[in-house]
Image 1 (cartoon, rainbow, N blue to C red):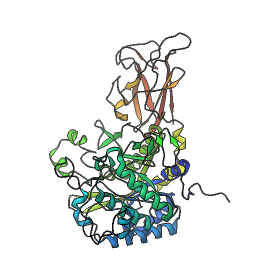
Image 2 (cartoon, one colour):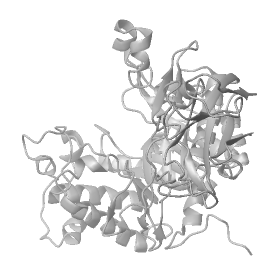
Image 3 (spheres, helix red, strand yellow):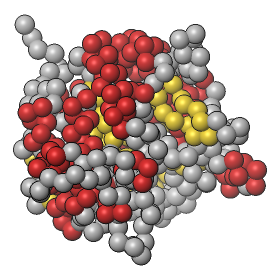
Image 4 (cartoon, rainbow, N blue to C red):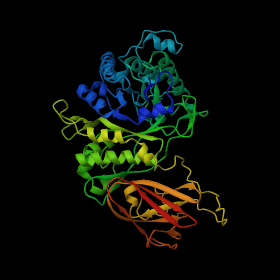
Length: 508
């Protein structure tokens, strides 16, 4: 009998890790959900395998034992429906007195750190950075032993509840005094060691908001994770925006002991406070466009669009991820806090179809199911190279001896729709990758159908340009060719051959 692609026990090869990341969602606090039965129905219907942010606390969650009891009960219920699903717990970059001080330090925490067992509670003040440090008042300093003990305590408790993954928040903030990442590295290794004996499948995986966390060539994380970066679009009605290419995932020896040129990467729609009601009242349309995501956090902006727009943006984000980061995946929103609305009530985005079982659903189950059925492979074939070095450096044409340009850029009226400035011949956002043989390539997703113009700028200058409309080199922004986009969210790949001045355009 052939084992499932999701099978692992004690070890998780990259292929298995990507199986889960390719079916990942952000399911913030699903273990506390009041619609858990319907949530499980959605998990089974769509094929979700990784529940990001499924458990954790931020501030004032209440009795710790009751919290872990609810996490364990929900995890057991989810695993009864699909034993393959991974639940991720969170240990964040903020701690609060009301959560820390009521918790008695278990004997096993002292023992794990080689300390005499004491009868005491966690010391909140001993978890924090020294007074006067320019950081948040509630941020733990992981270089301090009490903070390490708190992180380890929470990690073990979540492992015992059935969690097999951890999101470690903004890890570069609370490691500010942890020179060489020795303290956080120790904590993660202690949790890995505990998991190797006590976790459901003897393995836990870690991510954090980081592009790379490598020490002596070895990555402390199994994969890196980040929210998305956006660029507002002002020439269309409503609150439109596009995603922007940025740094990718660093490489190193993975926790599995395998060298990876680039570790896997997971994007998300993040939350940090909901709508900025002040911005809506006091700022202009243009000012608000540049204020976070049109005056709010990412998930609140997304939830505020109409259903067709939300479905379109999910499809766009999926395709954008596939072509802009061949090592990347997207944690689709299943459940995410929206913060307080105008009436002061906290709300939650839920992907579930609206029904009596989930009255607050946003009805996007079918959109996610279709995306998972399509899979990343179709668009990965068009993906930009994984390396950040664009190449073309000190390479000569073998026939003529002419040097290839180091920088080649696509420019034109299409640029604002991929996050660049219009007609910017020197843009890093629309810079092409050198793919060998004198050829340069760039793939991007156009979110809106229509007719645009474009040309190729060699050497990143308007003094040496080529287009499909003009077979002879030209200068300036005139003489550009046409780019006709047949449908929203069209994937476009442009390939340019330097010595022949040939431009090939493919669309899917």
